[in-house]
Image (cartoon, rainbow, N blue to C red; front, side, top):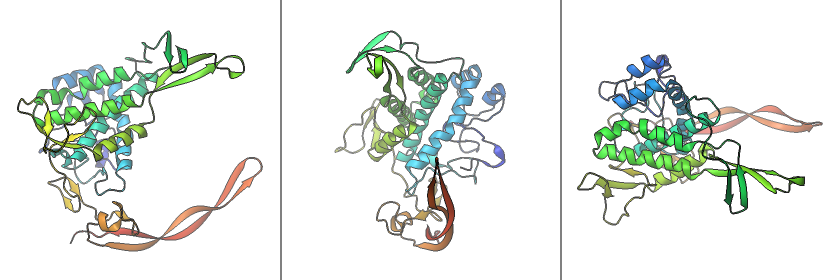
Length: 350
């Protein structure tokens, strides 16, 4: 992933570097400067965010490093779609002007970035990387589940602490706005945090004679972030287009026959562009040069991906592992073979 030229944004804590005059910067720009300098020089932060940034420099660094995980997950989820959560080094804005819109892609990005902050902080707490938190201190003593009683032990991920910090820091700017876009962002931030909590699982270790499991020690652990990404991708598919109610406090369905969205759903305000051609005003980077599947009839197929513009075919040589043999004991050794394959890429707009 190419972030920005000159190493301007080495770490980012959620999605974008806002450095242009047209768009205010936000907490989504984090550098590797000293914490005081970093916090004072990120334009667009509200006072609450600057205060928390100065008070918790290690937390900010953890969030910045964790940004790579959620952007990678976003790109995985949309790898075969016209919009593929792509980044650009052509502007001082990691996602171009996409974030000016209120589309379902923006809804997904807010949700997964908020989820990424919670997952990153809870993981850093459990690993002992932060002075301000550790394992969940409430998980002590005895408890019960469907299998019977158990003792709390190990290190339960302190997700509630991560959620509280995310609410205080991530949501601070949106709470000062309270317009339609701010309400949309707050809702999707909450949906992202809920998606992380949804996949907390009880993991146990058995004790007793011959593994009888007469005594169990258990702890709560977050699932791999892929499960959160999969869940939010499903929510994206079923995202609800909404409008703000007459009181300005919540949403109503934009169309009468649509159901009112729940707190777990993603919401958006305006339709998405088709992402077929490069259009800086809409935040579309186009599909010119994207690899497509000539035989697929799905969204990754050349007809859909290339928007009817056609595609070019080139033959390339790829190195693959072949002639693999098992050697006693215990290794598998393979040769490197060259394979000629056809690669199809969408034509640029004319």
